[in-house]
Image 1 (cartoon, rainbow over the protein chains, first blue to last red):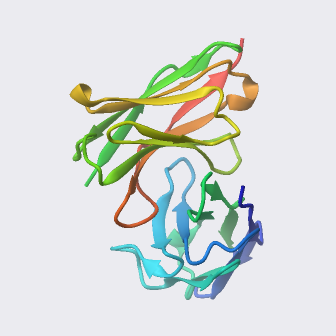
Image 2: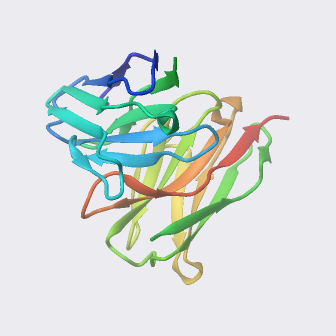
Length: 107
Length: 120
């Protein structure tokens, strides 16, 4: 199985700050990575696919980059509605596997 | 827009079978455009892919559950189902059904999730 390691597991930032989350894969997954946002009590929402492509309707302050084993997710200017847990997930091989999540809070 | 809704018992006894159904609207389960999937999330923890089924019945399961899990489709009802046998308290989780669009990537439509507790 491909292990996905996210860091940090939680962070606290101010409104307007730039926020960066890292996802490390245990093997080369090319660009086959997606990012989700999950708010408390809700289902995850797809934000980015193919490591860097923004899903339709997702604000442009969200972005992703990377390939191979190291990936980055960025919120360019944190907004109050971005408070959530963010997950990466690889789809290069089965079983599909998720990172452990990064909880983003407002300072 | 595909919409999904999970249904089933919220409490299952240890060693019994967990059975959930996902009712789909906005797409047909005979479409080859989707993988019809189950994902679970233990309380306060991360996401785990359980498995998926694709028309006309190809399945893929997480090896960690493979011997206990079965996903099936009822095309006449536009529903797909999850059966998980011999459950233990470790199977307590919110269970989500979701779709993976083959032409794109990612689980792009989700049900609201249903909490299943395993307890005597």
